[in-house]
Amino acid sequence: MEQIAAKVRAGERISGEEALVLWREAPLWLLGELATEAKRKVSSDKVYFNRNFHLEPTNLCVFNCKFCSYRRPKGSPEVWDYTMEQMEQIVRDRAESGATEIHIVGGVHPEHDIYYYAELIRRVKAIMPEVAVKAFTAVELSYMIRKAGLTTEEGLRLLIEAGMEAIPGGGAEIFDEQVRAKICPEKGSTAEWFEVHDAAHRLGLKTNATILYGHIETLEHRVDHLLRLRAQQDCTGGFNAFIPLKYRNFGNSMSEVGEVSIVEDLRMLAMSRIVLDNVPHIKAYWVMYGKQTTELALSFGADDIDGTIEDSTKIYSMAGAADSRPVMTIAEIERIAASAGFRAVERDTFYNEIVK
Image (tube, rainbow, N blue to C red; front, side):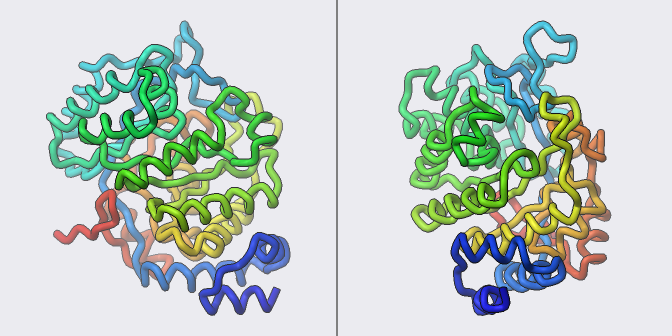
C-alpha cells in the first residue's frame, strides 16, 4: 500500500490491481490526502460551479430500470410530459436568471425521435441564445437517433447544428454487463454508451461520465468501470468531468439493497480522482450528496460541485435525496468552498472561468 501511495504522489498511473489494494486497505485519511494532492495538481485551490438549471421534458420512459425512482408508467397520476410550448415557458421563466447552462435530460420517450429534440434545442436557443445546451444521456441519444433511422454520427451532427454543445454523462450506470443485466436489463448496452461518447468526442463535443455505485456491484466492478473510462479518455480526451452517482433507494424496486455510508462515498470520490488521472475534473453533485457531505467531498478529490440548479430537477429528490427542492445560492457555494479550505470559482460548461 505504501508503494502504491508513493506512485500516486509521484503522479504515476496505478493499475487496476493496485487500485483495489488502495481502495480496500488505505485508511480514509490517506485516501483524502492522496486525492487532494492529485486535485491540487489539476485545479489548485479552486472549486468550480456554474449557474445552471435543468429541463426534464418527461418522466415517461420506455425502459424500467430497477434502481430508478424517476420513471412513471403511462397513465400514472405522477407522470409529466411537457408540450413544446410548456418547455419554452420554463426557459422563458429563467431567461433573466443569469444561467450559462441548461441541462436537458429525462425519460426515454416512446414517441419522440431526434427531430423533435432538435426542434426543442432550437427553441431553447431562440429564447436564450447565450446559454450552453448540455443535453441528453447516451441512452436517450441512442434511442432517438435509432428511431429516426440515422447513424450515431449523423444524429449528433443534427443536434450540433440545432445548438447542442455538450453531453452529460448519465446512463453509464455500471459497465459490467452481468451487473447491468440485473439492474437495467432493458437499457442500452455499455457498448452503446461508449459508441455515443466516442462519436461525440471525435466530433468535438465535450461530455461527462458517471457511475452508479452503492447497490449490488463490487469494488472490482467499480475499478473496471473507472479503467474503461480511463482507456476511452486516452483515445479521445473528450471527458470534462467524472461524476460518481450514489444509488438512492427510495421508491424503486431495489429498495431492500439499502444505501452505502458517507465514508464509502468519500472513498469512491477519492479513488475516482486517483484512478482517473487523465480526466480533468471530479464532480461532487451536491443535489445527490446534500450540502454537508458535499463540503466533505472537497477534501477527497472533488473540485466541482455542479451549479445553482434553481429547484429545476426531480431525479434525485424523487429517490429520497436530502434536498427535496434543490437550490444553492452563490453565497452558499462560496461558504462551502471556503470551509473546506478552497476558493469558489464560477465556470462555464467548458470550465472557462467567468470573471465578473
